[in-house]
Image (cartoon, rainbow over all chains, first blue to last red; front, side, top):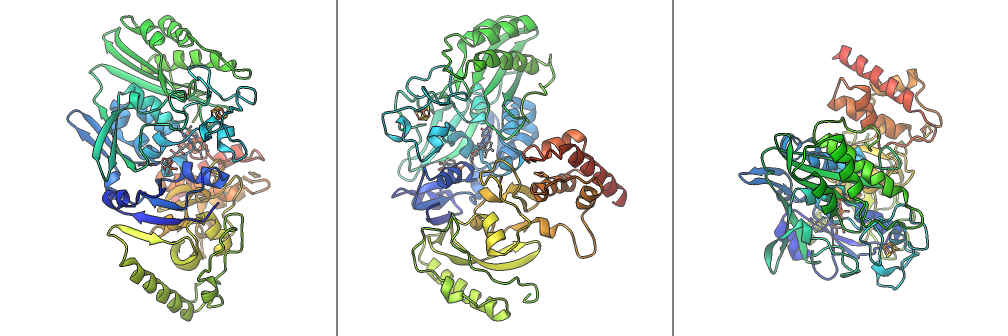
Length: 333
Length: 223
Ligand SMILES: Cc1cc2nc3c(=O)[nH]c(=O)nc-3n(C[C@H](O)[C@H](O)[C@H](O)COP(=O)(O)OP(=O)(O)OC[C@H]3O[C@@H](n4cnc5c(N)ncnc54)[C@H](O)[C@@H]3O)c2cc1C
Ligand code: SF4
Ligand code: FES
Ligand code: FES
């Protein structure tokens, strides 16, 4: 790893004043230090925001909940309010990575973590996402890559929490020294690779992600997230499902189905949602929704298995959210 | 304090420190060593740093790219050593302080063999900057037992023969002991979750579960 200077900041104001001349933010450091150890990132200055108290904690507001950017995944997973009312998010944060990583990883860093494509993570491969022309995954080892909506870069969205935040209609709060605060809806936060291969999200370098706001779910909402991995823990999803059901008695008034490991940006499956809307949740409707979620799938040479795994993940997670099935013991964590 | 001070060691050129060509304060402190004089010298350097600090804006503590002296609270004792900003806590422990109980395997957060507690929370010391441990209490495998008493989890690991090559064991023990500190009556499911980030190539998991549950029983009757 290259050497670097570090500004250890204790206030948002101090951190914003240091965000210039290529200085890079470090929160928990789990993602950033990995890239620095790999040699793909060589910043000569870090702005350490880990010790900014004001960015930590979960606050209930009349219209929902505000989560400080530095709140750890473990803190979110264990929070009684999040568990009761935003179950999909406590599920996602509680099943991302390992217990120890969850003690270190912040929600801001989780949402902002960069791609896990192994070509991207290696300093030996210069691909489209690093300003070159080539993608190595199409003709290379692509068993963990995308099956939908990938355009020129079939990497997959790595953040488990984002799968939940998309279903919950969260808003990302960004703050800069020059322009103060602005809010971006999560569905507009990530950038599709074909729109701009050099950006993963709309956050500018001089902006801090300061908070995440989540509106209160409608009465009768039930939700869940499950992640399927190659191992029982410590790995990113090969398939995952976020389900949010607004129930009117037995009838599903509104359904949201989200997926992370299918595409470069977290996505909703309108097709699966349409199957559930206005119907009771049963094994049959859940199975049909799972099947519909694969509309338009274009697997690569080595990841056809995902087209079978996603429908199962979605089927089982719909039933979990509806209270008709236990958490799948083969889902990670 | 000087009695407990470990020998001061220089960070050799490791994979993460190669490339630093700057002149450092290492030479200055070299050989200052173990004693009260060494500590006084370090205090002197720290006050020099504090003076430099006066020039930086409020709410910012500035660390340069070259090695600097720090004091880390490890296993209840203050330890003085030199680190760089890029020094990981695992390296500071193993190379800086010679506390080699903490193991490094994957060096990427994926195996938990480097588990230590930061203020009682188990974390991966290979992904934690040493500077992020300043002001926190670090507990390593060396600090789990006292002179008179072996930690119940360690004793149970021995009784159940819960290790083969032993390389994952310090991390396993730190994860299991952290679980029992926070939840004195865990179920097997709780143990499985607590060590779900700990990789054991030798496959000792069943014995780790048994040992931890046994230790919890012992813990509970003692309390
Ligand atoms: C073994 C392993 C398994 C994993 N499995 C999963 C998984 O299943 N699901 C999952 O979601 N993740 C997984 N992860 C990834 C892990 O959760 C992320 O690396 C972590 O959440 C990043 O958070 P951090 O606080 O450490 O971020 P950092 O590494 O500190 O930051 C990440 C990036 O965001 C920027 N940044 C961070 N915070 C801010 C902010 N507030 N404002 C502006 N910029 C900021 C940094 O500059 C950096 O580029 C895994 C990691 C490991 C090591
Ligand atoms: S999938 Fe994307 S990140 Fe991976 S090599 Fe191709 S262009 Fe690069
Ligand atoms: S060595 Fe730290 S997690 Fe593997
Ligand atoms: S005992 Fe050998 S790796 Fe666990």
